[in-house]
Image 1: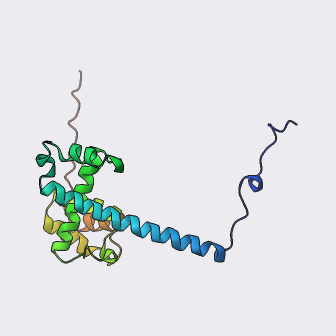
Image 2: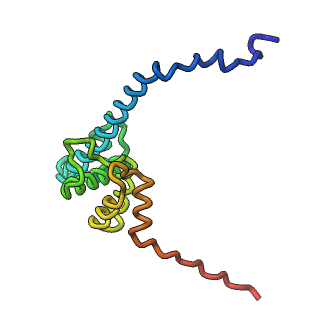
Image 3: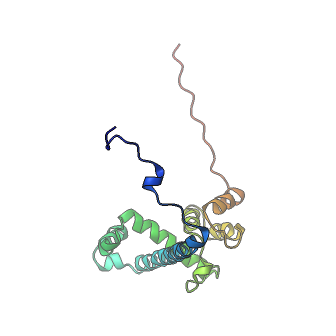
Length: 171
């Protein structure tokens, strides 16, 4: 058997698993990073919304906020679409702050990132009050996509399902 065709075992590729005790510092560090990502991502969204509301793109001679933000923040690898989506999430955060549901200085009050995306959809298709009702319906500390979606299903009217017209029969 040649060395190239020899099967590689899992033990040769992966090191031995660490103990739970050895993993705890790594887990704590990953959790700190995750919290920082959540906090900073939502604060970036708020800052982008404030820039859009302030007309930053117009000041710089751009008709599209997304295109302006993608250029201005090219180092962040934002696409125009992502800048727009983040701005919409920022709008959610600012509405929640105005209604004293979150404190932008205290990330412990922030909803989950996935939850804010669903709330953004509710805000854009329904109303500010509908979004607040959905937010209030979620368990405290668990404003994430699945709880927000469940609240949407429970509280908001579902779109009417239209039927397809029957095809014409050839007789």
